[in-house]
Amino acid sequence: KHGAGNGDSWQRSQSDIDDFTRIRRETFDAVADLPGIIHALRILSTKNLEQVATTKAVQYLLNKKMRSPSILCKVLFELMLVFALIFSFRLSVDVAVFLGGTFISPFVLVYITSILFILRDVLTIISVGSLSRRLIYRYFCDFWDLIELVAVIMAFSTTITLEVQGKNNASTVALAFTTLLLGLKLIGSLKAINKELATFVIAASKIIKDIKWFALLLIIALSMFAEIVHGIFIITPELCDDHSNLSEGKFCDANVLQSYIRIYSMAVGDIELENFMQTALVVFVYVVFTFFIIIVLLTILIAIVSDSYSKSVLKSDGLFGRARVEYVAKHLARGELLSLEMEGENVMENCKIILKRLFAWIVAIVAVCVAVLVGIFLVLICTKLSELKDEYGVRKQSYSFYVPCFSILTKLFLRN
Image 1: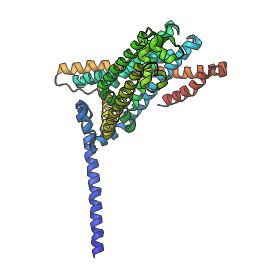
Image 2: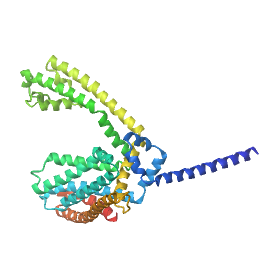
Image 3: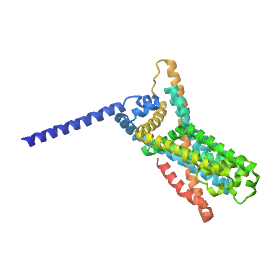
Image 4: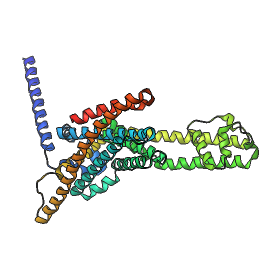
């Protein structure tokens, strides 16, 4: 009897668990189907949004939205466009350097992908502005949103410089900065897809914010020591007579910037006591520098970074949830802007909505046409790269690298 009673109790407990699971899933589905729930979350402050994103109901909501076919297709399509922009920009540089810009398809692909991203950002700003002006302010203050916008603009303008003025007049700073921004744009596009990646990306942003005042202190300290050592070397002539040590000879340079660069290299480990044995004063400065900068300040820097990263890991669910809320909210806002339902309370409001949506539809139609052009030029680039590979052979190994990249990208783009 006792055993039978335990069996009945277990069956009742299992039945209760099944009922609870079913009711919880129905509740979560009801929450996910609430109109405007994502936009309501988006309006919350950053701290409150991270707290709400850790709840099971919001996590279920975000998983359901991210797994919907419409969102998945948009995410895949945008990732392919980002890779197309990065590959075509890099190929444009090689074409401008080695072929003199005679192969124009990479340049055109950079233009049309940049235009497509700009149109998308215009739709985002309009759609976000129709929900709340506060979201527009937050959009332009968000680091990753600004990176995406500036990266596209820089890629567009730098490519024009390469095509029109050629490699001789191209700015190496612009090329390097654009490549950096495009890499950050790719990271920003991926941070809403994977939890670990979102934690790393947002943790890096938090670390930069946390060390900003310490970085100022470190810069002042390095500048102070650079001026001290530079002054000692240029005032003491015999220290600059020996040119055998080229690294320490930088302190004798009339350009004090060389001293700053040498001090920074010392701070990151390029330092030996034998190079600072000229006078007792130089040895003293060396001892103070190594203790204060390398031991004390860099240890504090490591502690600040470790503390910031530990806090980010503890809040990883909230950080990932915030990234996905912002990502999904932009997609839904653009989709709602293109809907045909009227939500205004009077004729004037409906007229404003109609004008906004008319403009949005024009932008969307142009974006679709541009997307078709992206596919066409991807095919043209693949064909031309195959010809270049056969023509130049091993002399142009970079083209051999681009052939599989553009081939895979073209197949994925056409299938999507």
